[in-house]
Amino acid sequence: MTTREKATNPSSATRRGFLGTASAVTAAAAALPVELSAQVAGSDQVKVGLIGMGGRGCGAVVQNLAGNDRARLVAVADAFADKIDGTGPRGSGLPAVTKQLEKLGKANQVDLPASRQYAGFDAYKQVVDESDLVCIATPPGFRPMHFEYAVNQGKHVFMEKPVCVDAFGFNKIVESAQKADDKGLKVVVGLQRHYEDVYRQAFAKVHEEGMLGDLLGGQCYWNGNQPWVIDRQESWNEMEYQMRNWYYFTWLCGDHNVEQHVHNIDVLNWFLSGNNERGCNPISAQGLGGRSGPLPRSVGEIFDHHYVEYRYGQEQNNAIVNSQARQATGAWRHVGEEIIGTEASLVMKGAQSVIKDAAGKTLWQYRKPRQRQPLSGGA
Image (cartoon, rainbow, N blue to C red; front, side, top):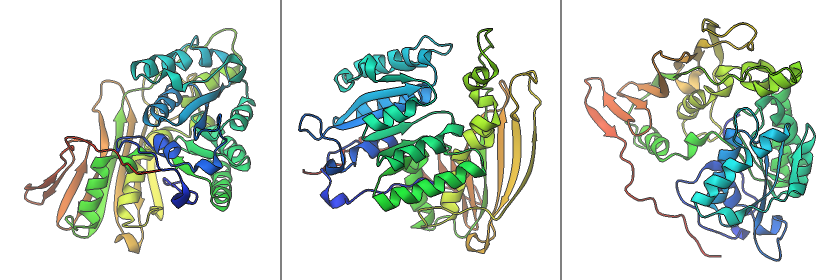
């Protein structure tokens, strides 16, 4: 599912400026129409709820609050209580959120008594019921049901990528997304490259200025280190062990291609689609993968390396994309994308993004703006 962002009656929304560097989750909170938000003491504050208290969830909610003075964190949930109070194996939780917000001078944007800190498999429902905007950062296998409930309750949603791990979850996401559109709800997915200045500039160079010529294909990579592993504890049953190590089980994470490499594949779909905001999809995919690292078979079931060849249709000039994804500490690390055209090629890797012609001459190189100005507007 590509990033989608739909605003409800934007002309009637209270326009509060938010920084151009704000994340997708900040954008979601900033653009919520006031008339659709539960009023807090007669103000236009937005009540934010967080489902999933791991590192990504805590990071997302800090970005949310730091980028929007209207936002207030009012409810949180996780399957495990120690993920909320930060006493679990990997820390994080509310202590990490509080510490970061204090550094930013935003501690006053947390209104979170113990009565609104929920633990358990059904705790997400209580958070949704308390909130205007729901941040969903649970393991991906749970996201379709959490998204479905939030939409049914009429709540705006920021949802981390990937949004699902299998065909059943995909169908549920699509159905709920249509309901969100019908209800005029705002939904943002955490494929943040769509919001990054370097990618937006590169996209304009490719599609507005035509610097690459006709697009022929590309490469994309997510070659990085082996992720964390949490040792099994005697008090855990098998379900808890798998959820604590959710990254290593396909029913929870979808595997490396889905959980991490989705960013890079999404960029290729986006760039090859031209001006179609929903992106495009390959018409075929074939590849190989396996598991060759040091982890024992008892630690999960995902592959630690993949190669996939994607082929696209006539509207994309029958482009071919080669994809690499690998988890191997100490090996070559590279995360990025390349687009190949008849006139030049684009290599995207943050501030190092560059367009060169066949002779190696640099035609364009990303330059970070000296100062990003707020996107401001009146009430």
